[in-house]
Image (cartoon, rainbow, N blue to C red):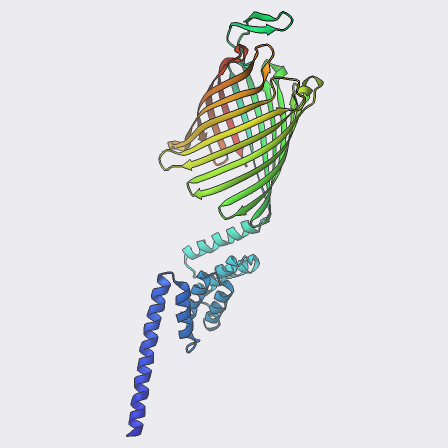
Length: 438
């Protein structure tokens, strides 16, 4: 009788434990599907203590550990599966992915390549593995080069920025009176050809730090106004740090300008910038730049200056109306010689740009801008501080001819209003552009 009671008690206990384990397993699966990985892991772990060879439990233990960022622990559970099932492709894939998350790229490559050896894996899995290998190869790469060659043909209706004909008066100190003058300057049109080469080099020091080097070569050659031909060499080196949704940069740069085949200007620059991603569609770039301008010709030395510029670009991409960019710029220039009245000034600029993709790989580009320049010193001839206001409108199209080749055509209207008559002018320009990227 006692034996029967003990046997019955043992059977009931076993059934209860089995029922409890079944209920716990279902609860763990429910928690896993709800992405409550920590709670799910604790239940799976308790169940596995009495069933170490249960490969389903080992898989969920590995997945729960992976989702919590415990990649080494996840690998240990997947190794249990492979010990019993050496050809389990899913476990192999999970191990490779875990090594990838640990940034153990050498081991991850080895694991992914072992998966590709199996000819029976589905095409979708093979494609997925190959994309992971491509990502790793890119992540392990230290040096990145890119660049562009740009060729422009420009027509300028008023190449000298000549003022409209009219009369104005200036103050003559020796006469202690105003003198009426006539502006007889004529607008001259001209063509120019621009050639631009851009080379970018990025050295990835580590995942969140790069060194960006940029070289720009620029040459503008006029058809008839040869004394305005310009050559420019610009170089900058910029350490860049990535922290979450932010990119921080500190750049050192040098601009070297030649005018009419003579050394003209050198500018030394220090730039601090931040780029912040609000969403996938909203980005903001802000920068502060300090420059020292030094002119090479003796006649221009009194134009040497310090320049401080604060710039902000707010970019918003829309689904139906393209990319909008709102640029705000404040610029303050301070002369170093204090001998001229046309150097020290403050500039306030605002412009709105839109880039709208069109069918057949066309893009419509528009830009509306306004700028105000206020000079610091009172002009001795006009007995006032010069103030210029510039309004401009730009309309253009680009067409992608191939992956690396872009053709563009842009028209610009510019109107400048000044409280000093000789600086009033307007102009129209048309530019055709060919861009090759590499």
